[in-house]
Structure formats: structure tokens, C-alpha cells
Length: 111
Length: 114
Image (cartoon, rainbow over all chains, first blue to last red; front, side, top):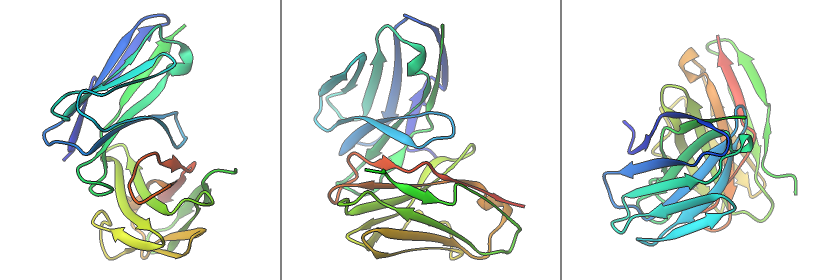
């Protein structure tokens, strides 16, 4: 069974629209990570969040971790076709141990 | 830097055969991870090494799977004997430090067992 849940499972948006992907755990996390995967390729690291309430941004992508460290969101502003891919959240419940990934959210951006 | 290198990129084998997947981590990284990705189960951590020592192998499915890291620049994942349900994409990743932090993934090996 998945220890991390992601929603939505898939998402299709028009270029220029904003979108949010969510990642939820039933247990408090030590660290929460966001990765992106393009079809047929390995994962690319986006961001890591460790502190409750933490928020990080890189270009048009912002990730937040809630105060209880059980929920994270990934927000993309003004989406572009280059944002298309599968977004996976990953987490460990103690430093370097029990590392798991969510099932992924497949994002398509229509030009 | 060439990034994480995996070989072969594709492997097709018959049930019962031995399969060996290879990984060269990024130079200077001291943690190495083997993952398996399938549509049904998503991305699963199989085993994790730190400084060439296996730290967590709880994800290794069964005795048919074994992994080694004889030195800091090379690791293998072996399946013997292989079964059709082992068909998946196998990823190797490496990172600095003992924790999982920012992992750099290889391109993966697509394994098909017929």
C-alpha cells in the first residue's frame, strides 16, 4: 500500500494556467521531496522541505510543507509545456531511512 | 560530470535466466539507491548503500534479488532466477551524505522477462 498519497492522479491544463498538486502522509515526515520525471527518463530533483511551515520556490514552482509535516503542495504558476511530466513526492520518516515515493501526478500542459 | 550511469538500458531475457544490472554513481557521492518502477506499484526503494555498506534492504522482494557494491564507483543488482513479474524499470540513484536528500537518478534499465 502507498504510504504517500498524491492528488490529483492526473491533470490536464491549458498553457498559462496555475495548478496545484498535493501530497499527503498519515505519519509525520522527516523530510519531503519533490521530483519530476519525464517519460522514459529518471527522476530530477526539484525541492526538499524539512521544517514545518517551510516554503520554497524555484522559478515558477513553489512547494510548501504544512506545520504538522504531513502534507505538502506543489504549485506551478503560469504553466508551460515544459512543465509536463510526472511529479512525485518522496519522503523519509527518519534521517535516511524508510524512504518512499508517492504514486505520482501526471501533468499535461496544452499549448 | 556524466551523471549516474546504468547499463544495460534495455534487457530482454527469458524466465529463469540470471540478470545483472549495473550502476556507476556520481564520483564523490557516498550513498547509492536501487529502485524499481512499475505501473502497478509505482517507484519502490529496493536497497540503499552508504559508503559501500548496505544500510536498508527491506525493500528487496525476495532471495532471488541481491545487490552488491564492491567499491565506491560500482554497484550491481542481480536477479536469479528471473520471473516475468520482475519486468520493470530499474533505477539507480546516488547522493552526497548519509541521508536521502537530493538524489541523482540514472536513466534506468528497462527489464522485460518473457
